[in-house]
Length: 285
Image (cartoon, rainbow, N blue to C red; front, side, top):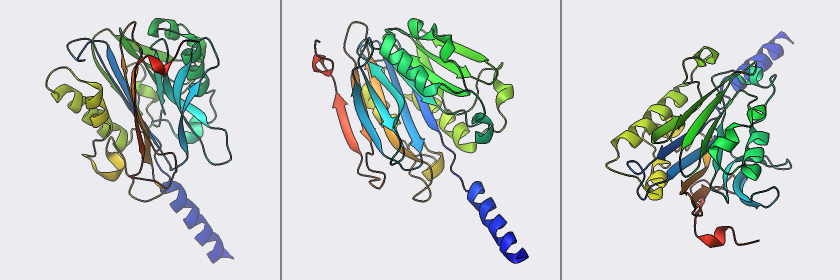
């Protein structure tokens, strides 16, 4: 009996130790000095254990929006980020620097926050007024044709906002604002590596960037299977990049959208690639 108990405990420890670090990479560039043609570029790589994903056009609410939805078989798929017909994009990332068991005990509104903002807001300024959505912990990256912002949401109703009218923003899975850094219980190697690498890619790019450049940045695999921007995973059930979405936003223009998505969890390397743009994205009602 003792041997069996020891073996069972050992197996449980091994399972939890090997549990994947669930994460995402968020990045944006704003202004004519950084974006070819002006406006804003914003993107997200979604990293998770293999599970079904889909790109969906949602028509409920004041504004229609395209969103990445994901969830395990038999469960309701949840919104992971998207862009609406007024040119507001909102993406989320997990605050993995706080242990998952601690995060699970706290109020959380990431999916509700994005739904509220995408369905009802036309600009970053409007979206940031919805402070009731800032329940965490989590990170949000928002953009319209004129600016980008991230929101770091911590426990106990604390949050921090950084807005830029020009330049770049990068966020992964740990707190960056000095006032929020105490919430970093443990910063993962992957989060640090991806953050530094994306900052490097944005800083070293010669001249203004295009949507195609943001799509290419999302494919970067400089740091191996588990720590790169595009994560292939060191084994078939480890954390992997399942979807990438990049958007070009210009005031008064429909968004241009790039999506690379693995709809079938088993189809690694066979992801569907879509380039969507023009007035037909959101035809007149």
